[in-house]
Length: 299
Image (cartoon, rainbow, N blue to C red):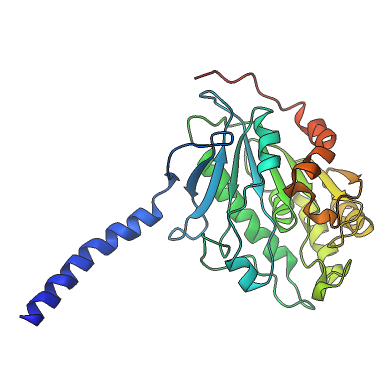
């Protein structure tokens, strides 16, 4: 009798598991729209097909189609901090972009928070960091999410913008030379990896390797980059950020380097706050003014 019940339970479990896995892997919207700015949870592809990325999507009123802005978040080498990371939303930055006609996607990359999975963008040990490999891994995740969203009927195929922050911006630089059609501009807030090495301000793991990787990305870059750094960024100081930008430009990349005023107690987190986005507003508008779409149709 017990054996029969166990067999039945295993059969039921076997029937349910594939459905559960399938449900977890299903891509697209994961619920109704909410506030602000039609906030909606999505699942989008990653380079690991079995592990989709959790994402939030914001949209202007109307049916579109809207140009896409993808925000690539910062990261950390610390496993525990990555696991505990809340879903990145960049609400102030997203609202700024929505107000200018963009649909905004903020995907949470592999190895972070609810998305989980393997952390593909690991840079390795501080003294022997492989920043090129890490950046290209981030770029692959950005591209996978962007390609998927641009197949949606409410998204235009042209005029896309990638807005990166820290490690996310570093991945955007790696993507600047890829054949990703329809990307009009990259906005990079303090791009880099390995900042505040051992938690010391303005110390970078293997800085020569980061400069070398920036030049490597610049050699194939085709998309113009606006490089923004706050005057009090202690992860990548303005002087070191300029060195990185110069290496990117010297190898062939198109860069408009801008130093913003000091912001708060740590300028590295400027794009995550309302005040920081306001501070960067003129620079952001300078990039976006030539990319603005026609007005969206109202629903």
